[in-house]
Length: 142
Image (cartoon, rainbow, N blue to C red):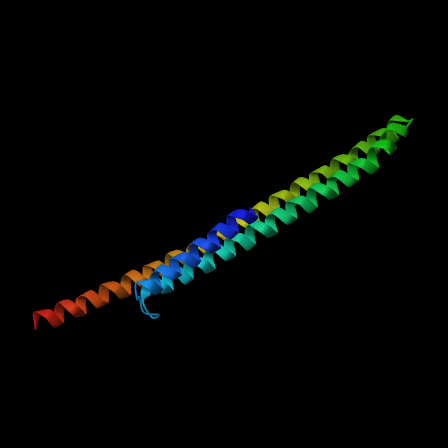
């Protein structure tokens, strides 16, 4: 993943270099779109990093719980104690599954918000572009 991030940063740096070489002014819409793209990629990267970290934490916690519970489970002599330990182990595994679902739900929500923001800014850009064209058309017609 780290190599892909570095490749992406290098590619964006080259794109900015090409814009400079071509003499594209700093206030050109392409530069704004490139900057917006960089921000979106950085936000999605943060979202995936946090989700991955949370997933790993949940798995490590479940592993530790199972590791501690198995010897106790195997030492039980009475059926009632065995059922109680099994229930505790099952509860821990279900808690882990619940944490996984929460992480994925949170990730989905964050991606959705990023996408909605992207689409609303894209539609704002299109509507302003339409208004500009109309003004040009009116000015040309006069």
